[in-house]
Image (cartoon, rainbow, N blue to C red):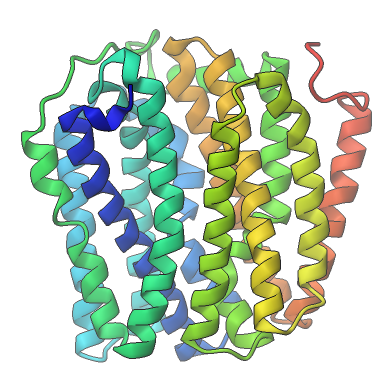
Length: 401
């Protein structure tokens, strides 16, 4: 049975998908405005990635606090605050008063709210649907995120091209509105708290990390996620800079490369969804990582927008396949009472790595051509992967020891 047959989840799914569209629209708009104001590779990457950095750095801390939150109240408050930040971004653009400082500050604030909401969202789905629909709900949640990644950037590019940034930011802010009444009125199941939720903060914080470290298959999966996010996916987060500096394109070029990367991500979600055999997923992860590194290298040699769009489709596919594949392994390998905490560490490594990788890419791009930086990063990633694979895992990632 499909989780959309559940009325509460159906309302949540569609309204949450709309709000995710807004997040991507806002991200693309802020990144493009920063590039227009500064024409700086570093500052564009910094402001764009400010939406991701708090989730990467603070995710595990917020996850531990979230264990004792009222999920309904927390979700409502966070979404209202995200809407207000979105309206402030629009209002400053309406007054033509945006500066690098306002864009960076508001991006960090929105990133902090997203960091708070991320663990809440992971747990929230489990109290919306009965247990027999949970697997379907998790899969649809992932498809919703990647679907919004296709539609959101394309819509943002259209709004920027045919209207202006003022309209773009207003639409982005208003997309948060439909989810709020759904969160207020939808019925929820009683949540079972995780083991250890009564302990002190640092004990609970470290517990998830310790579980991952002492479980070899989880540790190996997190290692693959780190390499993919740091050395490949980071480039997806600085696409406004790539569109402006390398492709010499406006909003159309930006919309095209972000949309095709999202299409690749959506295709990967569907592909993983049809691979129910965990061992098959495990064996494909390294292949996806290697393909992502090779394609990322080639992107550094491309300056034509349509060709680059094709290659970004492959990058979107490989990075998402690695991300969802390792997440699936965690879902299957980790007992339920620890699952949310370990998934938060997965999220922290993923977001934290792509944030640092993207900022380093932007910083290096200030001193050498960005195309050269794009060429070098995956080569370094490959060398690190091979060294750690050989010395730590003896060339066998997915054995059981």
